[in-house]
Length: 271
Image (cartoon, rainbow, N blue to C red):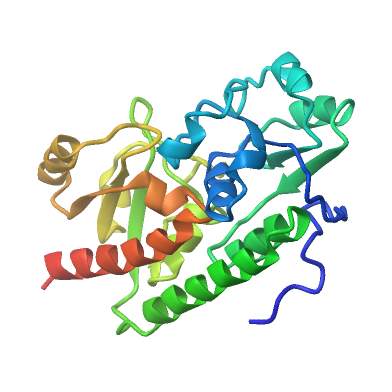
């Protein structure tokens, strides 16, 4: 795949000029990790409390609140030139407030695994790490080729659970659902049409499923949850690493490898 002709155009179509001396605040955990992978950790002057990877580098970066409850005054005192936000993870009023005193608010919105290529090139283009971004993209393409070279299994319908009490899943327009789609797994349509729908277990729903996936985040499902639910439902229930399934950016490399292992795991349960 050729480099994007507009590597510094963000998700809102706004152009961002190269900024070699940028002071960056990242309000997106996945992108904080990506910036570090591109060798830009020293320029990241602020992060959220959820930006926990890579631990050895982010420990020295000041926290500015959470992804939803950002401390604007802390950010103001850090005097960043750029703040990175995400359409799904950060609130629009927060981005608008930041634009009043931060010269550049970079908006991101990756929706599918291959969107990581443009995301890496966007960060590399703005922050003058273009070659590292291209090296990362080459590594991504290699992992993606391995994923696509796997023997195709039969189509599966799987319910990906992110919460209980109430039970919540993901819709088919989420990054997680598109990750699953890469190995031929679909998430079912539920009566609740929101992006993260609530649902109740019913014989009708269970009858449509080949498996249930319990994510380790944001709810901390465990193997004990998976074992109990499998006994209740009578179909395979797998515990899955939520970071591998939902974190885009540099984590997507490991995420693609994880998908291959997950595919093998479910197919192994049905032979």
